[in-house]
Image (tube, rainbow, N blue to C red):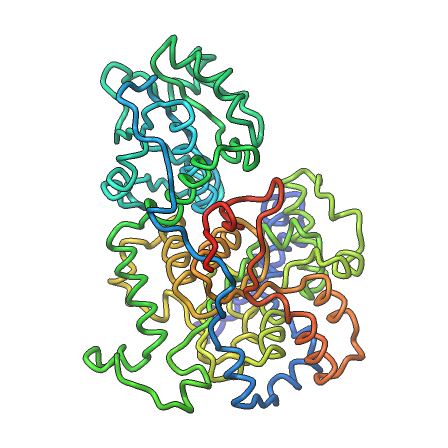
Length: 511
């Protein structure tokens, strides 16, 4: 009896503790601020497009459709330029001084900044100090250039173009991030405008080099123009991006292992038999092939979009509070309704929606899908509909052991590097939302002439708003709306990035 009474008392105490934040909210302000976020994570969102999902689960795809879907791209008249096609001026004997750059952002933004830093060193006839990678406040990864990229290969690949040193020379030992953070320094250049011209650097940075022997530029991301650059500078940027920037061996090894396991699933059991041949019919249905889906659906993106993702009032409140904390409510999309945003293609696709897109394009439930994603908002519950459509979906965790992942665990830049490596080696790449990862991978795949599917966001937004559509109508509209969005090469236009659109700057006529 005493034990039973004790158990009842314990249960009552627990119940009171759980109710305290609701009975006395002012005493638990921090908790109540977090509560909507917690509730939005606990409440598994229901499928928003149940009618379409039911049709997609019952879909059948013919061998002819799959053969066309998996077929590699034909020659589009462009190819990567060979060494003989690239004419650059030789390395001059006397350097004007040392260039230091501090790069913020995530891995792919930093990658583009590295390419620009090499180009700038060439413009100024300066020696480049291996770029300093800032710690991203969101990802909190302190990985250095040497942790991510093969620095010896980088220097060797560019030895005929510019001089590069791994560390700040002893005479400039004081030129550190901490030194520039504490006061205004004559050797720091912090006024470089976005997409500054070569002449701007010649007028504003070269004098600093001539006076002090070193110039530190911060911020530097997106600080070099894509237009009105000498041809040799453009080609040098291409060389850095596609040849000089190679990941460290352990990232390449893990990436190769993941690619092999995606192509030959039996290799996870019998590594001696992973090169076995597959029959012609299986080849047509995509056996030995895989799709990479870059799914950026983290809390930042969900909140900043100001769209409704079907998580109910708790989710709406949680995302609204998050917007207020992070951006103080200054989010342009907040002034529009969810319907307006979706019809304009301004809402990121949910895992369920990207799954419906892939199913409508013809990918069936035997498709091997690799999920390149940091963290999906809502967790496994959010991707359950996608997994029901593609049960062979994999990621780093499912494909590699904890021992294999030990060197990259908890390091966002190294995790992103593995995803980037697998993405550029896949048969097909699909990105659910634009961004630096999308841009970096699309540029590499254009350069290699491999298939990339670009979702028609405005069309899909309108289709998903139309709740009367049946599966056949949705499928037909999707196929029609994506005929010209499956890897067709697009030439770079004015102000567009050379890293996303490498033709014609990085590529030569194939005829």
